Image (cartoon, rainbow, N blue to C red):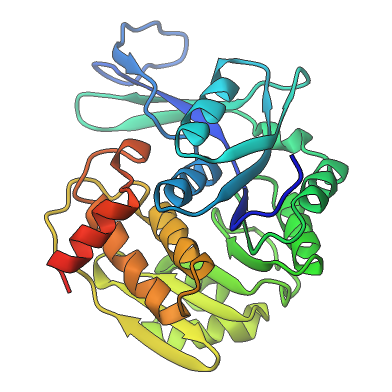
Length: 311
């Protein structure tokens, strides 16, 4: 259906399978496994979209999955959060991306990661989706999908008047050539150091690194997530530091995706960059007190209650 949304997300959907083994296998060996399960986690695009939906943002998703059970889970998880999936294309050309994680009794793991079905997402399909949703406010993408197509989508969204956000994870292995069409680059401290051209053991402060990312990448604003150290924003020439909320951490998986969803939901609601980052730090703090990703993502009312208790 053609209409505008608060936020459009275009990034990965894939499904992981997890099992436990006594020890990791050697070449040619067959092993018994137990507790084989599929966690409720669809990858960076799916999880950000679910987070946005739960936090009250009118959200749509663009992507491509196979005609298979893994793809159906993407529709199920996102639509349950109120996300529109009219432009989550399906195809028989490729299977939905999936991976297998084997974990031994010592906690060591081995991972087999399948191809991304987003390889088959055509630029013409991106154009069709974005034209149909012209007038939408925000566009989020990232490198959970092929980075060339992610950046193509961001340029197209920007040309249609949308505010663009990029999560450059995993980091590209080459220079992006200047991304002045990206309004907000949202990344963690390790990614920020790399994109600023700094070694990981740099003695520069977070407040110094954020402007260097903007200078090097030619983006408009920088949002750095710092885990237990909070966050830093660099916007309109101003650096702002957001202190963390002290909580009992259970699981940090997906905290960055929740931050990105919460930050953008607040921007879409008319909040300032500083207000949005303040909210996102608290939303992520609430998330890490819970196990998992999608099951742990808070709803809007829960975040508001948490903020009231942790002013």
